[in-house]
Each structure stands twice: as structure tokens, then as C-alpha cells.
Length: 332
Image (tube, rainbow, N blue to C red; front, side, top):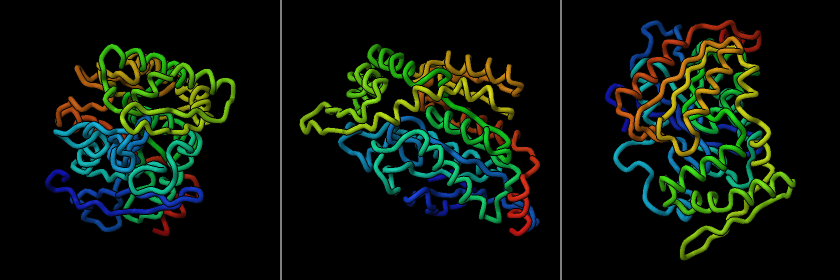
């Protein structure tokens, strides 16, 4: 359920390459009184591993991979919480199931980073046909890997005016895998999930094989069934060579960073480094640490989620649109 005063989400399906991806558009109930006025909106992008549109580990389409209960049984997952909070501020949002997750077509292990970037661009394009959305006030929230995707999309899209990056990495996926595996070994965070446990155990072999440009790695998941997952190593190699810190030097936009102090996937130092680089590139960047919260901000109270949404809503100022988007907006 969404907060009171938020419209029921509208199911949306859109084409991404040769596949159809599924998501939902959440509109605020407080629509503008002038029908010609349009609503600012935000694209929400999930973190690493197979996740659904809400940002939770996708134990629906991959029950054997995440076989020990839901990630956050006492409250909705991060992106769903943010969608509700944004709607309460008068901002629409769109989020979707990545390839091979939820209701979307495709195969998650076969996908790669560049394809997920293209999918995010296709999601933006699909929403630009919606006449109630203001194309000149567009933002992106990226969580974990979604932060890398958000930076990649925004660099080439002048209509994206503001970003919020949550649990963002700065350095390459190679460093994140090594540091994250060590952190989770100490804390036990998410190690109850077979896919996470297998990745942590075989992270060094994954790195070595990807750097040798081998095509795939077969992971044997722990447990009675001992399911095998065949990973496309090209996807991981792309992450090794596409660090967010390099992307940040090419961005000139309003960017705020949010990071859980107990993040076992991306250490808070990653956002501190990213904040320094973003500011050096001329961006108005600010880091907000969330005490005692992990990567998914499960521990963050609703007040904090609302403040994250309000901050982004306040930065969605009108931007000049390229001619093609201006024409689309005027026709709408």
C-alpha cells in the first residue's frame, strides 16, 4: 500500500531493445488545478543483483537465489518507499523490473551494464510520451549500481536536471566486490541469500576470469538443490572499467548523495570520494550519511525517506529542453 493521498499506480510496459519491461507510474493525487500544467517526475533505478521494481532482492522470479525470506519484512523496500514519499511532495515517479526480474522479459545473468544503461534510457523515452509529466523537470534516483546507471544516463541527457545517488560506489566494481565480500564476511549481512553467499565465496575467481576476458562463470549456489547460475562475465568486466568516479568528472548537474553508515555493499567512503570529485567538476553536491542504516536504508525511518524525497523535489527546477523534447512537450 502507498501512503494515503497517493493515486493507485498505473501498470506500464515498454520496449527495451528486443524485450518488453514492466513497471508502474505513480502519480500524486494533488494534480495541478490547471490542466495545462505538468507534474515533475523521477526515474527510480535499483541496486546490484536481481531486484524488482521496489528495489528488493527478486525472490519472486528467483526463489532459489534468495530463499530465506523477504529482505525487509516489516516495511516496503527502498524504491517503493521513495515512490510514495515523492508522490506526497507532488512528484510523480516511474520504476520498473530490470531484465529477467519481476514481470519483465529477459534473463538477468545474461545481461550487462551497458544494456541496463540502455534500458534506463528507454524507460525515460517511454515516459516522455506521457502528457501529464513535465519533461523539463526530470530527476533520477539511483541506488548502488543504479547510481552508476543514473550518472551514465544524465551525462548524455540535458533534460535530466537533478540526481540523488544512494549507496553509490566511486571506484570500480572490482574494488566493490572485494571490499563488500570482506565486509559481509564480518557482519553476515545478506549472507543468508544463496546468490550473495556464492558471489562472496567466488569473488576473486570471478574477478580473475573476467580480467582474462573469459565468457562465463558457473556459480554453484549453496543449499540442498545446489542450483547453478551461469554469469555473463562481460557484464562484470564492464563494471570493472566503468567506475562512477570517472563518470562524475563529466557531469554538470545538481547531485546529492545519501549513504547508510553501515552499508556492507558500498562503504560510505565511496560517497565521500564521489562528493569530492563531483564538487571538483563544478556540481552542487552534498552528502547525507544515515546513521545505523545499511545499503537498503531499511533502518531509516519514514521521516528520513520523506526528507530525501523533499530534497530532490526541491531541486527539480525547469531546465531548457533540446528541440526534439520541446516539440514533444508542446504537442502534448
